[in-house]
Picture (cartoon, one colour):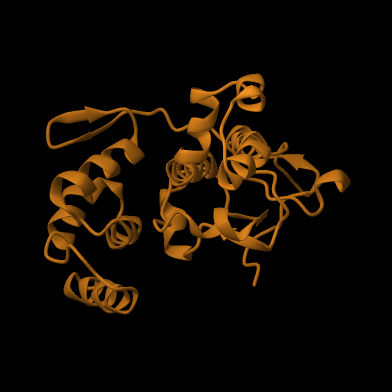
Length: 217
């Protein structure tokens, strides 16, 4: 169900994922949870997505749609690294002229470059201009430095990534708690979530509610 205004979709892109250019499967809300609106630097919105882009990043709280898109691109790159490496190890001509033998290798020669170009195209895809109600949506790139524990990070998302890795946090839980209590209480969010490093989806929701109860929210 769409909670937020749907971005305007050009006719030629009416069945297209905004993130990667593949056929769309659904329309998604950004942010996923209404409590995460407090972290964002622009209005919430709804936009078309394929299933892979909609589900490949488990974390939901981001400062902007561009930050979320960057996370999706990073996850797609990691997932399809083997296919992308074809372009690093071969040229199209080298692949066509290679002397690989056997049915498996023949199949690789026929499909490998096509698969590489398809994935490369998805990674490089930039979507179309964002408009709602015929007005262009201006989204600032998140480049404001954020300081935590005496260290200055390029932005809030960089600080989140560092904290998750350093303190072995459950990223989905941490970002949801942070979105509720605010980035000014970043350290408190870290302390609250360090007690729950690994969670299932069911347990994560129970812990989230328990944490909010413990701080009177």
